[in-house]
Every structure is written in structure tokens, then in C-alpha cells.
Image (cartoon, rainbow, N blue to C red; front, side, top):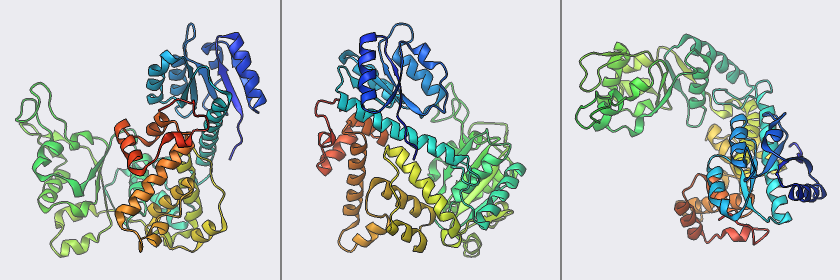
Length: 453
């Protein structure tokens, strides 16, 4: 991991700017000091190997506007705001808009140094991940299939051809093998890449609401707004891609409806008198044997043959073991980046598990294992499976949830506001979970005077 120490300090108060610069240099940071936002923006781009520390209240371009402009340039550039007590509400709004952290003045040196080190750690992870994304056959972006095995190389080539041709595709394979990643790769490869990618979970469709949710309705139709028509999923996916996830679990009645739309490439919205044309690429994914389901009467032949003109099979991870190291490193770096923790060293035990385990849960199991390593938890899911003899499922889930809460609070030094933002939890939900597990944010604060809850 890259070792970063660069701080771009922005404060219009000369005395405070000088004092902060000296304190940070003594702490081992390299400081670039500026008296205003415009000067600090000069020469910055998304490759900046450091973080920004800025006062909020400054003449001209203030710290909030500076953050907005930096966020537009690079949403992953950490910006820490220094605020007065009256600015806390504004700073919280900035956190929600993507700012890394805020500290109230006067700020203790220990708290400031700790916050900057966490931000630099995260910045290093971002830059390292970006570097890895540009390595041959290791691009970690949506729509890219990671790996170097012959099987995944052939699938990447197939995704390119099928995306360019806008062909309908049936993607099969075991759970967690990467069927959704394949669908994303097809979307990214063709002329529809800039169009909608509409994901439909076939196992959770409500038959009673199918017409309204999929076909949409003209304005004023029963149950719809008087002055606005309802746009259904078919229209949302027009000129883009419709992904039918777990297509084998479609109710038979809806199979017939969808088969008709696919054949006609048009549909009538509720209350409409004219059919709307439909330009779609249909991608369907399943882990079931649709031919067997068709033979047993559980899947309609007309829909099967319309979907299966082109079929791709995603092999299990056990059949492409050459891909495991690249996938694990990608998952590990992604998990550490989300949590703001350093990438742990691989132990012989972890390396042995990567080499010897068959990964029946495929890439999803490998991703969970990487997340457990990032959190410093026992290996998952195998660790949980080993414990299952002595613990029931609710206890196992509670143990895992408590571990995540502690890890994120540790990474944020007990800053509850920042922790709940990173976890994507509402305040009440966050504190309910803490109370349930007997966890207090102040247990993780190096400086008990630091605010943030």
C-alpha cells in the first residue's frame, strides 16, 4: 500500500495556518499551506496523492464550496473540514454530501493527526485500487470480468461480441459464479452502455401489480396521478437492457406476458390505445436447468426458446482457480476502502485457504472471506460454519453484525456520525444496533473530547 503524508491545508488566518503547519510537520506530514480556496485548487486533479484540510468560514470561496468543487473533481478525495461550534450543522450536511470528516475548533493535535492519518490511509487505498484497475486483466470496474483463466478470457471476449450485437442472452451457472457481472460486462461492451440497465428480481414480482409496474399507465388511469403517466419497467429499459434475474422463478402467468412482449417488441400501457415500440436487449440469468424445468411444465417453452438462442455458462470458481488471487485482492481492497482500514498482510493460513478451499459459494463466498479479513474477523463464511455447531443462526448473524459495527467505529475513532454515514444507516437504526450489542462509540475514541456523535 502507498505510504502518503501530503496535506493541503487551507485557512485564511495566518497565525492558525502557521501553527497548524508546524504541528503537522512535527507529526511527520508534508504540508502545503494556502490562504484561500482558489489558490488551493490550482494544480489539483484526481491523482492528488494526499488529502485536503480546510477551514469552513473563509472570504470568497468558503470551505463548503471548496468541498463541492473538489468532490466534483474527485468524489474519493478526502476533505476534512475545520469548523466553529456554530458550523456543526453545516459540516454534518457536508458529510452527507461526501466530505470525509469535520473537526470543531480548537482541535487537539492528537485528534487532528488521527483523522488525517485515517484519511491518508483511505486515499492510499483509492490510489492503489485505481492503479490496479489499469493493470492488464485486473480492471476492477463495473462491467469487467476479473481473472486470467482461459474460461474467463473466453467469456470476456463473448461479452464484447454479444454487447456489440445487442443479442438476447441466457446466462446460467451456480450461485455466486458471476452471472450478474457477466450481464454488466455485456452492457458495458455494446452501444447500450450509456442506456438504462433495469434489474428485475423475478422471485419477488407481485402478479397483482405487474401491469402497472411493467407496462405503466396513461395519466388519469385508475390508481395513477391525474396529470402524469406512470412509466413501467419496459419503458424504463427502452433502448437499454432488461435483466431478468432468477428468471426460472417467474410465475407461469407472467412468463406468458413477458414472452409476448419479447416477441412483439411492443406493449400497451394501461389506458393506452396505441402500442409503444420497445427496443430491448434481454439478459436472463438463472442457476436452474431451464430445459428440465420446461420438460416438467414449470417453465414455458415459448419463453425458453426466446431467451436461450444464445446461452453462456459461468463456471464455478473451483474450475478457474487461476482467477482466485486476482479476485481475492480486488475484494480485499474494495472492502478495506469501504471501511477505511489498512489492507492486512496475508498470513500463511489465508494463503493456504485460498489455495486449498473449493469455494462452493464461488465469488460471493470469496468476497465474504475477503471482507472478514478486512475486518479482522474469523474467516467467513467458513468461520461461521465451523461455529454453527454451537450457535444458532440469529446468534451467528448478531456476532457478525457486532463485529462490523466495532470495526467501523474503530476505523472512525468512535466518530458516530461518520460511522453511520459509512454504514449507510439512519441515526435511530444505528443507535438501536449499538444498544442491542452493548457497544458505545466513546470506547473507540483516543481523545474523549472529540465530537462526532
